[in-house]
Length: 301
Length: 301
Figure (cartoon, rainbow over the protein chains, first blue to last red):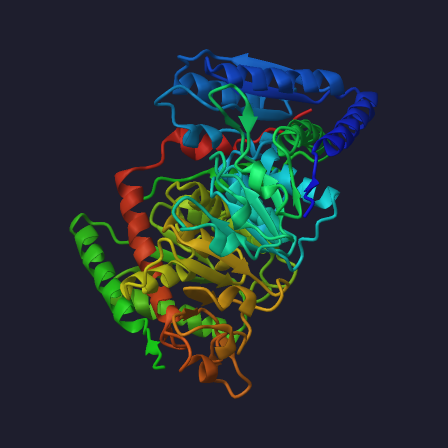
């Protein structure tokens, strides 16, 4: 069986082109979309990743502000920066880059990102809005998976799709996006037992567990399309996904490579979300009722 | 095969008892938990349901305010009432009862319910918080399903659970609750094709689709535990679930009845959520940073 390789690169190029066009069109009206990336780590691969966002932004004409608060930044400082950026009219998109310093509660910080600027779907409100079908940005990685499948015309409606991994940034939002496309969606994870029970009969399997070699050839069938979201750095410095390529290649119908698959689309989508945010914020500022009221909590009793 | 009937009534009685005890304990400190039910319909079965909440509240000592705005209430009026109740310290829980008048956007109204008082998990922020593991109330019906399964010691960790129905008030929040209990969760729906593909091999099947007779005996196996969330009123006025009882009884391992199953637990849980809300609002008013900041959206550009 020959396994088709589903590269993310042609799609990434299309999205970059779309971003460039929208940047030009917004520029006519004197608007320049800007994304802000907040980071607080000495981790080298994170610095490398943030620089790759910066370079992609430069290529497409999106403004990019890197706010590096250093590896010892405190939670109040991070919170203050996120509040300021949420209130700053010249910033359209905000990314809070992990990892954060030990002890900092990422959970409460992401709630400070204004939903309209939450271009990587980190605020729980974005996830909730996604679930009920209200406008919201999905995490770019989750959207990448769906975009790749649609780009290669893999049918989703009425199909059985298995997502391996239940994280708030990939597994859960992805399952919502797939449900909205009429798939039957199964979410498996580290404690749900042998994968094959669910993956063997699936039409599409998406692996987003962060464990090299997790999905093997015996877990899939010849009609399974496999999307590999994993990015694991091996001791020798090489990058591999969650799929055991050696055995899945030759067994599955199709497979996204790592690198060059989902990851290559994600950065382009972050920029596309930024220009979409810029357009929305320009054309329809949130009505005061929606923006303020749900949030004015009262301490009762 | 004899199918065990999993009645909700013993569990409902336990929850009522717990509510009564907590009401007494709060009363020692001069606090009386209060739930407010906002309604705007002439629909008789809705009036009947709201009266049943009122009676259950009376029995357990929870205060209950019915705010009936009439079948021609407008969206601004409903919004104003929800804002007032969210800000009113003597109200601990808020239920926005559907159906609402035609043209009223339920979606934007539920966002006005303060998350701390959102005891039926209607605000998308509650769903988002549930997804990321932050404190939030699940819709009472979704929690009822999990409580019944746990009451009867049906194992969930490592099991395959199929949820039929993808609504924001049952299917989606329920799938989050089940994932948090380490089940592998499949969500099917009206467009996912024949149910048997997913339900036949499942350990637990929860049907919440609102279609009488949807799940039949041929869709399940002798080890399947079936939970019926459906409440369909037949032309003769009788109440049936989504399960074809005639064929599932005798085939499945266990089944919750309708009426007397999930529904009988739901009202008790609404009251339990109300006393939980009263205790939380009393002991830990939300810090200003969390309560106000994430919500102060700015219209950019």
